[in-house]
Length: 426
Image (cartoon, rainbow, N blue to C red):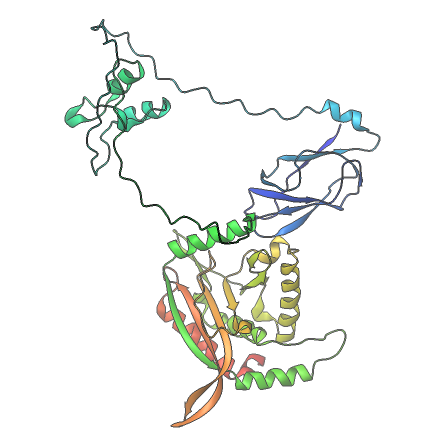
């Protein structure tokens, strides 16, 4: 009997995905553990591995199909000794029967009434009111079940309220529907100038998920922002010295400013654990581990791989791990456990020359640190002007779970580590 290959759940939040590409063709042999398809989830594009040996007998879902539900059959695998004739025994899944049209509940037979006029009378609709249409819950349900516009039913209840008998009378043809009320035309968006050349890039499942999450974050999370300027000269000197001492081959590293930022954030969260938090309706959840998410730009969009227990790792280990995660992220090869979770996010645009910016919080986290470029600026030291390399960092904070004082304490712990990076090595 052919084995059904099902759409896998490749992330904890995945309910559906896009079958981006088949890596095997019908009739080709498949080995257990071998990649047979690429699945695009709301986080990344990942390879799907075969669970059994056999031959790919029939592809049920073609490449490029979006919205495929988790556990839905996508292909049939022929077991050893089976040929294509076995596929004939597998019946295609039956489509769900269409729902029967809704009908109104039976009502007692009405008493004989006067004959209706030969021609239906179109009753003008009353002037639209600014308030809600007055109708009983039962009348609303009956109208909805019958596919009837409740606004076009004349009400006979108190103060013109629409009740059950009004809906039933219209459904039985005893009363005509009201004429549609004149609704003022809504202002239309300016038409697109089709004379301008353009290219449309279809939204992927990943891009839609990012857009949805960021919209929810900006709409539902009360953001506030705290900024601090950090002098980088000592850090840049230490970085150059450490990189010059890096071994070749195994154990090699090349530290970046961002590696120091990750280390400083991790140690600051250990000092100020109240910033390593998540808001829930029942309680504020304080994380025991310091897991740092780092924003990485990929061709598909932004993703945040996680450095686990970053407070227990040195600069070289953070650097090597971050480089490997970023490479897999850009290739769309991250595993779910490498990008889920995390209690705090770092977003660094300094390499693009951005002086400062405010980032949108990555839910369900409470904080994200936006890191700008290090640039030479005038500073005042001992009452005299001097030149220093300064980096602006802006902390976006969820005010529900992290108070302003906690955010300030975090930055007060972070700034000295950046300005005197030898303290990170202790």
